[in-house]
Amino acid sequence: MIYRSIFRAFSSDLAIDLGTANTLVYVAGKGIVLNEPSIVAVNRSTGEIVGCGSEAKEMLGRTPTNIVAIRPLRDGVIADFKMAERMLNYFIQKAHKRKSLVHPRIVVGVPSETTEVEKRAVLDSAYRAKASEVYLVEQAMVAALGAGLPVTEPRGNMVVDIGGGTTDIAVISLSGIVYSRSIRVAGNQMDDAIMEYVKKKYNLLIGERTAERIKMEIGSAYPLEEPAEIEIRGRDLLQGLPKSVTVNHAEVREALSDCVTTIIAAVRAALERTPPELSGDITERGIILTGGGAMLKRLDEKIRVDTGLPVLIADEPLASVVLGTGKMLENFKLLRKMALN
Image 1 (cartoon, rainbow, N blue to C red):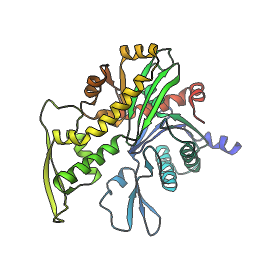
Image 2 (cartoon, one colour):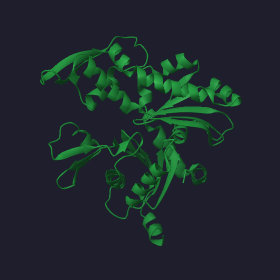
Image 3 (tube, one colour):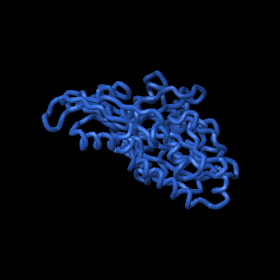
Image 4 (tube, rainbow, N blue to C red):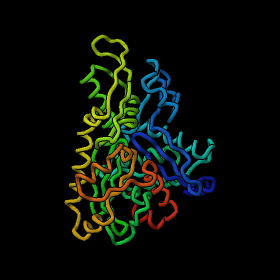
C-alpha cells in the first residue's frame, strides 16, 4: 500500500468510459485525452498485440488468417478478460504518455444491471493494468452528471444512455437512482440488424464497418425530411462475387425498427415505475439522451411522439459518461457516495 501511494505521486487520476464500441479516458486536470475503439488486434501464432484502438479497427475484416481483431467487451461487460486487461494497460500508458510508474486511481462506469462477477472482471482488469485504486459507478448516473443534470437536487431527472452494447435508463433524484434498467439493445445491435436486413433483402454480405457507416449516414428512427440513399459494397451470397447495391433511408429505418421499439418500450416501462412527484418533474424537464446511439437521426423526435414528453440530446452525447465520471474524480465525497464497490 505504501508503494502504491508512492507510485500515485507520479500518476494522474483517470476516469474511463470502458465501452463496448469505444473507450474514452479523462485525465484529472486535463480533460478527455483519449477516444479510441475498444478493439485489439492479436497475432494468433505469437499472442503478440499488433494493434489497439483505431489501428486495430482499421484491420477489422481485413486481416490475414494469423491475425484476429478482437472486441474484449460484449454487451457492456468484459467478454475476454486477458484482452481487456491488455487493452486497458495500453490505453492507460497512452493517456499518460509514458511506460512506467503509472499507478493511477481509476473510476470506471458500468451498466446498471452488471452482475457481481462482471464487476469483479472490470476491477481485476483495472488492477492488473496497474491501477492503485478502482471505483465502479453506474453509467446512467455519470451520464446524467456529464450531461449537466442537477442530480443532487430533490427533483426527478431521467437519462437514457444508448451506448454500443447496452442502453441504460435511470430516474435520478438526490444523488441516488430511484429506478434503473439496462437492456442489451444499443448501437452494436443496430449494426447487426442492418447487416441482417441487407443479407435477407439483397443476398449481400457486408461487414460491421459498412453497417455502421450506413447507420451513421442515413439511419433514422423517424422519417427524414429529405430522402437519402447510399451505395454499399459487399459479397454476393449466391455468386460469391463482389457486388454493389443502393439502399435508401426508409429501408434502413425498417431494419432498425425493432431496436428502436425495444428501447422506447424500456423508456415507457421506466416512466410507469416512476413515483408521481418525480414523474411531474420529468414531464416539466424532459428526458435526456446521451451516448452514441442518441445521435441516430430523429430518435429524439420518435421518443417524443411515443411518450408525449420533451426529449433533449446532451450537448456532448458521446462524451457524457466519461465527463460525468471525470467529475467524480474532482468530488471524492460524491464518488464515495455513488461508488458500487
